[in-house]
Image 1 (cartoon, helix red, strand yellow):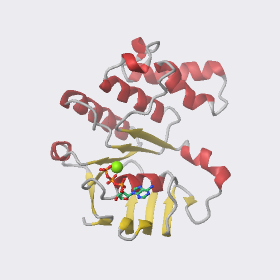
Image 2 (image 1 turned 180 degrees about the vertical axis):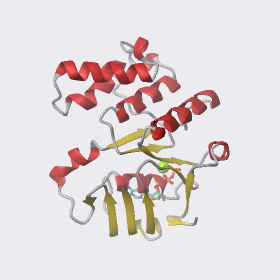
Image 3 (image 1 turned 120 degrees about the horizontal axis):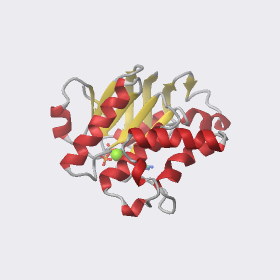
Amino acid sequence: MVEFKNVTIKYSENVGIFNVNLSIGKGEFVFLLGDSGAGKSTILKAIYFDEIPTSGEVIFAEHSSLTLKNKELPFIRRKIGVVFYDFKLLEDRNVFENVAFALRVTQMPRKQVKIKTLKILTEMGLVQQRYKMPNNLSAGEKQKVAIARALINEPYILLADEPTGNLDIASEREIIEILKKVNLRGTAVLMATHNTRIVEENTSFQKIYLSKGKITG
Ligand SMILES: Nc1ncnc2c1ncn2[C@@H]1O[C@H](COP(=O)(O)OP(=O)(O)OP(=O)(O)O)[C@@H](O)[C@H]1O
Ligand SMILES: [Mg+2]
C-alpha cells in the first residue's frame, strides 16, 4: 500500500532522507524509529505527499509521486489519517465539531455526519465530552479526539508522529491500545517515535530504524 523506491528528499547537503526503500502492506503496524532529526517526520510527510521526492518515487495506494496531480490531493489525503504529538485540534470548536469537520468537507448529508461522528466518539469513550472545547480536555482526551478525527473517513493508513510525546505513561498506554485496536480492524499504522519503552512493550510489530536520513535496519 505504501512503497518508497530509492527516495531522496534533500533539504540541503546531508540534510533530509537519502535512498530510502521501504514498503508497508495493508493492515501492518510499523514503528518508525530514530533520533531527533533522523528523518521520521519527513517520511510521514512524503506518504502524505506533503513533501515530493527530490529523486525516487513514493507510491500510496494507486498514486505515485511521479504522476500526482494537485487536484487529486484532497481525495488522496482522505485515505490517510494523521495524528501529531501536539494534537492540532481546532481550538474554537468543540469535540463533536473537531471530528465532524473532516466529514463535512466531503459534502456528506448532515444527518449522516451526525450519526458517523457520534458512533466514533462513542467507540473512543468521548461521547459524554462532545460539547467540551479542546482546552477543557486532558492531553490524553485531546489525542483521542485527534485519533477519532483521523479515522472518521476510514483511511487505509494512520500516520502517527510521536502521538504519545505529550502524554503521561497511563495515557500513552491507552493511546497505544487504541492504535492496536484500529490496526486489528484493518487500518495500517505507521508510528514515528523515539520512545524506546513503547517499542520494548510491543515487540511483535515491525520496526524501521533510521539514522541521519538513512534506513539502518
Ligand atoms: N522544511 C525543512 N527545511 C529544511 N530542513 C528540514 C525541513 N524539514 C526537516 N528538515 C531537516 O531534515 C532533517 C530530518 O527532519 P525530520 O523532521 O524528518 O526528523 P525527525 O526524525 O522527525 O526528528 P524529531 O524526532 O525531532 O521529530 C532534520 O535535520 C531537519 O532539520
Ligand atoms: Mg519528527
